[in-house]
Amino acid sequence: MNKRRPTKIIDQLGREAVLTSAARLFRDQGYERTTVKEVAKACNMLPGSLHYRYHTKEAILVDLMRLGLERAALAVTEACVNVSDPVEQLRRGINAHLKMLVTGSDMVYVLLFEWRALRGDARKEMIELRDRYEALWAAMLSLLAQHGAIRKDVDLNLLRLIGLGALNWVATWFNENGRYSLEDIGDFVWLVINSAFVVPSETSIK
Image (cartoon, rainbow, N blue to C red; front, top):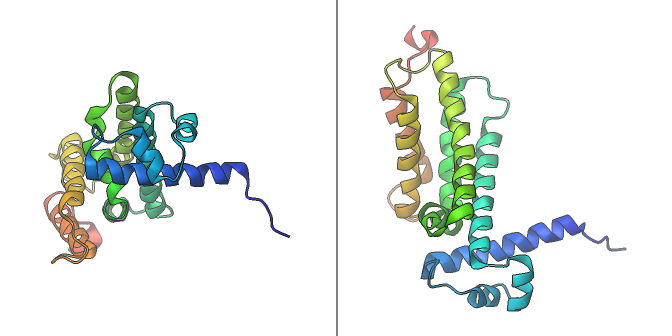
C-alpha cells in the first residue's frame, strides 16, 4: 500500500522545483527580462497555477533568495555543530559556505547579483534575511575574539564584510573542471586567514 506524502513535503518539493527553474532563467536571461509566463513554462505549470503560489515575479525572486539563505545558514550551522574549538568552527564554516556557493550556483548567483532589483518591503526583507545570515559569521568571529584566538587589532566587522565578499566572488569564476578544486580554494582561503588574523594556540607554539 502506497503512503501519500504529507502535504507540507509536497509543497516544499514544488517550491524548490519552481525556484530552481526560476533561478536558472533569472541567471541566463536576467531577472528584468524574464517573464512569469516563461517561469511557468519552465516548471511545466500553467501561468494561473504559478500565480496562485506567487502573485508577482518579485515574490518569486524574494522566495528564491529566502531559500538560498536558508540553505546557506543550514549548511554553515550543520558544519559547525558539535565543534567546540572556535578556530575549527570558522574553518568548517568557510568550507561549508564555499561548497554552498558552487553547488547551488544558479540560485546563489541570483542571490548575489539580482537583489538590487527588489524594491520597498521586498528589499527590506531581503536585507533582514541577509543580515540574519551574516550574524552567524559575526558570532563565530566574536567567539574567536573572546577566546583570544584572533589578533586584537583586527576590525571584526570589516573582516566579516571583506571575507564574505571574497568568498562570494568565487561563485563568479569557479569552474569544476578548472585549475583549482574547491578543496584548493578552501585551503588557500584558510591559509590566508590563519596566517594573517588567527593567534596561534599555546599547543601549536610548543
